[in-house]
Image 1 (cartoon, helix red, strand yellow):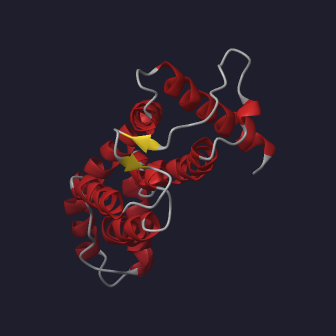
Image 2: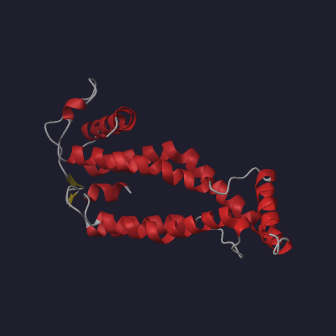
Amino acid sequence: MGQLLHTVLYLPLFNTLIYLYNVLPGHDIGVAIIIITLLIRLLVWPLANKSIVAQKQMAGLQPKLNKLKEQYKNDKQGLATATMQLYKDEKMNPLSSCVPLLVQLPLLIVFYWVLTDVLHSKNLNELYPFISTPESIKVLAFGFLDLLKPNYVLAVLAGAAQFWQTKMLPMTSPVVKTEGSKDESMTAMMNKQMMYMMPLMIVVIGFSLPGGLSLYW
């Protein structure tokens, strides 16, 4: 892990999770994970909201894009120029909806490290001075769920939740695939991959990772 990631992401997440574990009644690590998940969602909400707005704008722009394709169906270069001009006039970036995912991936990776260390009661010497050091972390959440071991039910639920969340977003699908619509095609392709591949990846990965990570997702 790079020093920058360690300082900027790992330590704040690690200390926040331990702090929540310390102050919660019953010291339930599952509840602590849920709370820190909500905090992270609030943190990335501006980017997520921007992505939703961009996808809605892209869906609203589809009729104009289709009109351009019809108008320039025999002129690839003209279509490319007209499409980019339309994006410029509408002040849109067709790839902007992908930014939140790219931002969340480092968070997910770092939180995996944090969760692994917390569940194994490791690196407790890296707590900030004002955070009390617990003797150990109880990995049993809600009185019955071992978050240190992979949990198939949580993995499937995490994948289903990801699919539902992506399904609720407006998707764009180009009618004609031409050189001039390559940016739009790329966006549609990434949207489709996010809808089907991402949930499947989450389920497969969740079968081998600690249940706490699936709970977070």
